Image 1 (spheres, rainbow, N blue to C red):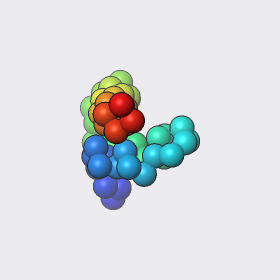
Image 2: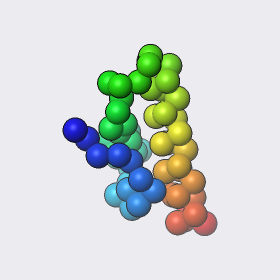
Image 3: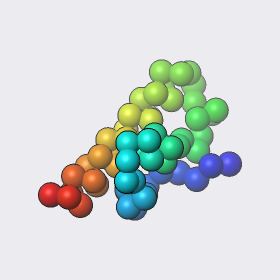
Image 4: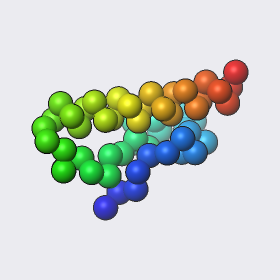
Length: 57
């Protein structure tokens, strides 16, 4: 089972492809439907983006 995505994982992002590779939903197969899964992925990406902006601001 994949680990959850946390803000600290933003330290591992150097290029855009890293961003896509790091964002993982540990419970993606348990979600009610694909829409909920995409929504969760967007939230994870938003959290990482905020962390990156803090780091480089």
